[in-house]
Image: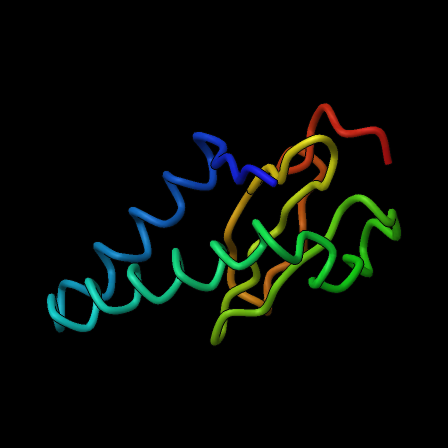
Length: 100
């Protein structure tokens, strides 16, 4: 199954990488590499993430990556909708356009 990243998700990844890079550029690059490798496994196992509790839809799932959540939708492809800190509540605007 194909994995597609939304502009919002890519923007969030870039912001996180810049934040980490301010202290440790090498750690930022490694974090991004590990994140994309982890998300890449969704190609073979798209429903391996848990259902997002705030949404409670079997199509909207998340994988935990360190202190971050990668929120995605499973349809004909896997769409990565957003990346956020685990402690943050999911906003409806981050899953806009999804039938919940």
